[in-house]
Length: 477
Image 1: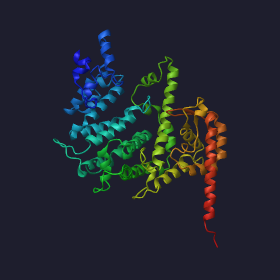
Image 2: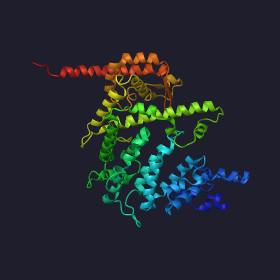
Image 3: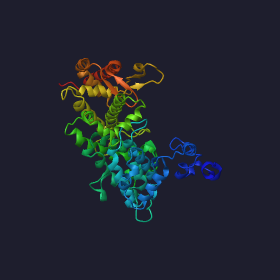
């Protein structure tokens, strides 16, 4: 009892040095992730033992078995990890495994990376307060690469020199011993559809050094891959620009071959993706119970479908934004659109190609009349908000800063000039329509007026710019 309840017995000098096993088992640590004190009080007062999935020892034992040679698949398919709480159990297992991955040998590291990639489609992409397990697992994958994806031998780990950490880049791009199984190709494989593209864009974003994710080996590998003599210390913005160049170009090249060249509409494919692919292998009743404690199953189902709709909006907005925005590294990650399609230039060539694709294919009513709805949904997914206003219609509004969602405001203005009348007629035909996001619900009836006002401003600027360009052109003799 003293060991469990008396904090002085632990003789802790510094909380930061406390091991995970201690944090997860001693009553003096009662953080939200474990609630140790509450669990012990329930045991004493009610004789209520916790479920195995709520105990740290289950996950530590599982990691120990993996380190001793058991396959991760054998662990994740064992009864304790196949209960109705399996997604929670998998989440905790990966957390403990990643935290202890520094000491893995090559076989265990390969198994961990490969299994996590294979299991991504099984995990929910539905938000539950935070991002779904599928999205959270992408960060676990990048941390695994940083800690265990290089320099492994049967014995001692090699130093993180360029020739050793470059293995991380080889894993990412599918080179050397990883030819044919590169992570970029696997994450966005044809069978993974649009959700694979969200995985890939999240993976790319986590690799941007300006986000300060403490992934030094990943950052260094992406730089060394382009120049073995390059510095990996210095101004973070310059390091991020260098490290993200090839990764961004490779990701865009893959998207171009998949969607732009064959003129496939990414937005339409997100809308057509079956709901069960967003849910993964989590029983839908568990997601419904996370939404509300109300016993009305019909209401639960409606709320679940709204969450799936919000997840669809997120995929469209996030993938489009990451590929099209041309922002430099300022702490939020370098935009793919900052770079040219090839070479060392950074004049926004990718951004221009993405804008052409989005407006000429995805939003073009000449291709399909409903494409204008993709445009309007995109606008309503990128509203600004003010927490100081009570009225929902006023709290969420269109602004010139946020409405483009990574696209070029001038291109939006020209699109609006060309299709304004048709779009307004289509809105009258559609009537009411809602767009669900992770943070708010927007409706055509309440929010499109402010969207149209901003689009009118974009159109005015685009028209003025076009007129000035015409004036600057020399007249033919």
